[in-house]
View (cartoon, helix red, strand yellow):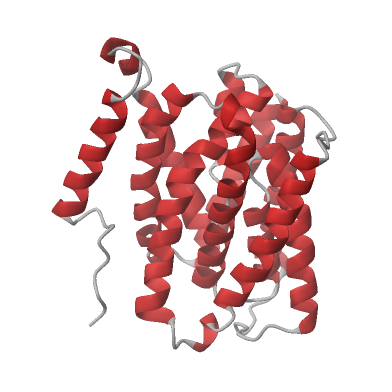
Length: 289
């Protein structure tokens, strides 16, 4: 029998510890309780973003950036705050997915490339991301335009793969061309992530799905790569983080990140891809409106 994870929503010990730590964070804030209560709705936003991010492999920024743009956050603040919230949600999702792999998927043929995908893509992503910060490479366009165009392109592309790609036997083996592609995805995706707070996870999901890898493995790998990437980014942007928002959205994202794996295991591949694509199309269209 597989060992139960400590980080699960049905574990009273985890819930108590979670609430104690969250209360400690709130009490350590320099703001009064009445001031902090104005930010409670961000708990729902954090949960929603993390559920979406950790059930599709996309970064939570696909939820956070459009919302922050509507709330008139300046660009650096929106990106930095998105990174900070994702450090909570993507980490919770990564730990949950890793436990799922270690307890249920280690010997499964379809997951044999899991660790290698994460290792290669993560290293390349961190390099690409830090290169953008180190050389101060500016985004090609304003945040809302870049983000919206990125979302629309990915959304349309996913729709096309659903209806144009024929059913195919799931792949388990990585070839030389895959390693080259993973390096390129990591470098380019890391750069896009530095600009938008999302990118590498989405691109990795698209590529692995095109190569017909197992859907659950694809999502798990993308979540872990995204988690590593946001932690690499947060040290570069922490001075711009809107911490009052993170105090509520971050813990909410932890809950969403844990719940997401359950959602994935109960949805078909097609439904999950359609859910992912529709959100990208909607958020992209709203951003350009």
